[in-house]
Structures are given as structure tokens and as C-alpha cells.
Amino acid sequence: MTGALTEHQEQARTQFRAFTDRHIAPHADTWHRAQRTPPAVIRLLAEEGLLGMHVPREYGGGGCDAVTLGLLAGELGRACSSVRSLLTVHSMVAHTVARWAGREVKERWLPRLASGERIAALAVSEPGTGSDAAGVSTRIDRDGDDFIVSGHKKWITYGDSADVFLLVGRSAEGPTALLVERDTPGLSTELIEDMIGIRASMTAHVRLDGCRIPGSHLLARAGLGVSHAVGAALDLGRYTVGWGCVGILDAALEACVDYACRREQFGSLIKDHQLVRRMISDMYTDARAARLLCLEAGRLRDARDPHAPAATSTAKYFAAAAAGRAAADAVQLHGANGCSSDYPVQRLLGDSRVMEIIEGSAQLHQVGLAEYAFQQRPCRSER
Ligand SMILES: Cc1cc2nc3c(=O)[nH]c(=O)nc-3n(C[C@H](O)[C@H](O)[C@H](O)COP(=O)(O)OP(=O)(O)OC[C@H]3O[C@@H](n4cnc5c(N)ncnc54)[C@H](O)[C@@H]3O)c2cc1C
Image 1 (cartoon, rainbow, N blue to C red):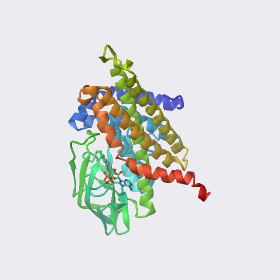
Image 2 (cartoon, rainbow, N blue to C red):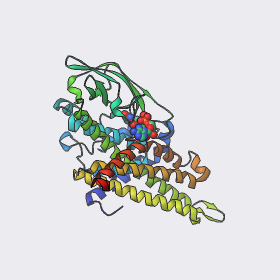
Image 3 (spheres, rainbow, N blue to C red):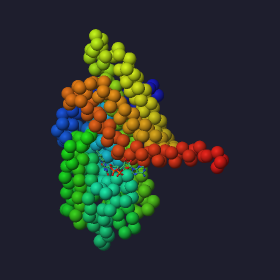
Image 4 (cartoon, helix red, strand yellow):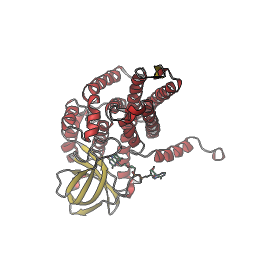
């Protein structure tokens, strides 16, 4: 590690590593092939308190700091990106409920989300709406004290098994966020199979046909309310995805070091071929750099520094691109074996592709970070 963690954070990381090495990593390829996360695994994560680590203690969560949450996402990402994505979406929703929901919804849902007894998913994207989340077309109409919701959400991670959804739709005033329970009449889900990556994350269509949602389930009204609430959720999602990419980098590096020390060609181990060493050195450097950027983002988040969102975007953007480079090199270094499902690097390659699309595509981070850079260092003519 870096030596820059507190003793408590270092202990937590050691525990996360022991847990994922025992219960997650050995099964990740099987779940990837089956395109399912077994319910028993979700129960185990819940029993260990891992799904509610970031939920405030007053609601039964672990109340952990951002760095510790990141370390957990990193270890889960090293073991299985699908399971890491469960932590991501569940934490995003729990975080939003903790900060923005009314008392009744908080008291009903936060203890269940903290314990992991119930699983949450984030339902923003639609067939016609992705990066531009403000363009959602799912309709939210007032009917007395209630809302009536109709529309189609797509690509919803763990949408096929989640108990509750943070849904963003469009009311007469504009984009609006509600909490929608799975057993609401009119709500149905359908699994999306054969994705390129995070294949065990039970990504789904969520269809809503005249769903009646109590007015108390309003999380954020149109305008600044929804942009703050959903913006904060996406910011947290980016943070855990960045750390998940650190995990992919670690997994790629470990797999490659192991393979290069065993595979012989041209009378020597491939680890002794200089061009193979170059791939290892790039992976190592990328892994270190991504980890340090994620750690910086975590520390700024814990300090409530106003630059934390930009640091989070930087970390996610870099780590996702680095994970993509490392996974591609990892397949290359494994040769034909890397193209087969006998080795985990094939899974890492598919998972890494997804990382540059979710929680802000690479291009959206580029656009936002360039804007931030211009703000921080104004053009000379404007100084
Ligand atoms: C595996 C997986 C899981 C997902 N899970 C969830 C989930 O749980 N909940 C949820 O709500 N959504 C989820 N999504 C959807 C995800 O949020 C979107 O895929 C993402 O926001 C990008 O939107 P899009 O796919 O529609 O691409 P588009 O927005 O259509 O973008 C297409 C291309 O255009 C580029 N582009 C778009 N706008 C700009 C711009 N202004 N400047 C430059 N380039 C631009 C993009 O970078 C991209 O390369 C998931 C997606 C995947 C693949």
C-alpha cells in the first residue's frame, strides 16, 4: 500500500482483502459466465456490514469515511467488478436518501439499506437518454398527494433484483427524483443479458405503467433540488467506480506477474523479454497513479473540500482509462490464453470497457475537466 493510510484504514483494507480473497474472487468467473450474482453472496455482503458501511451510524450503518469506502470498492473491484457495482449503486441511493429524503422515508428505508436487508438501484438512464440525464422522459404526474409514474428505464444495474429504485423522471416542473419500491403495482423488470462487461450485475429494463407513488417518496424537486441530489449521487458513484478501476488494475497486474513468471517462450520465461517488462511497468505505474488520485479524492471528500468533485472526476477519468490499458495489455501478455475464459483477464477487459462509459463517459469527464482547468488557470489575456 502507500503508507499514507491511517491504522484504522489499513486494518479495514486488510479485512476487505481477506474477505474478497475468500468469498468473491474465486467465484467471479463463474458468476460472470452465469450472468448472475447469487443471492447468497448479497446476503453475505449484508451480514458483513459491507453494503451499509457508508450509511450514517444513527440509521444502523457503519458511518465510515470516504477513504475507507474507496478501499472497499477497490478490493471488491479487484475481485469482481459486478459485485463492486452493487456497492456503487446501493451506496449512491443510500447516500441520497440519507441527505435528501423526508423523515418518514429515511426511517423506513435507511435501516434496511444500511443492513443490506434491502437492495437499492439507480434508475436514471432510458433508451433515449444517457449522458444528458436532464433529458429523461419518464412521466411524473401529480394526483392529489401522490405521483403517477410511467416510463421505461434501461441499463439499471441490479435492476433485476433491487427492492427499491431512486428514479429520475420528468414532472411538469422538470426533472424530479422519487424513491420507487419494487412491489409497486405497474412496475416490471426484465434482465438484459450478454453485456460486454459487469455481466453478473443483473442489469435490467425497468418499466413503469401508471405506478402510484406516495408524495412522501419525493427525494428532490425539479430545479436545484434535483441537480444537487442526483449530482451528489453521481459524484459518489464516480468515486467508487474510480476505486473499482484501481481494483481492475491490481488484478491485471497480479495476473500478468503470475503468468509471466510461469510461461516460457524462446527458451526463457516471458518475464525476461523486455517488451513484456514494458507492459508490466506501465501497468504498475498506472496502478500506482490511479490509487494516488483516488486517495486524494477520498481525502478531499472527507475534508469536505470544494475541489473534491473535480478530484473525483480526475481520479475516475484516469483510473478508467488506465484500467482499459492494463486489461488490454493483460490479454496481450497472456496470448491465446488471454482470449479464453480460462483466465480472468478476458473478464477484466470487458469490465474495463464499461468503466469508461458509466458514471460519466470519458468524453464527459474530458469536457468537465477542461472547463475546471480553465477556471483554475485562466487564460493570460483574462488575468
Ligand atoms: C453496464 C452498464 C451499467 C449501467 N448501469 C446504470 C444504472 O445503474 N443506472 C442508470 O441510470 N444508468 C446505467 N447505465 C447507463 C449509463 O449511465 C449510460 O450508458 C451513460 O450515462 C452513457 O449514456 P449512453 O450510453 O446513452 O451514451 P450517450 O450519452 O448516447 O453517448 C454516446 C457517445 O457520445 C459521447 N457524448 C455524449 N455527449 C457528449 C458531449 N456532450 N461531449 C462529448 N461527447 C459526448 C459519449 O461520451 C459516448 O461516447 C449503465 C450502462 C452500462 C453499460
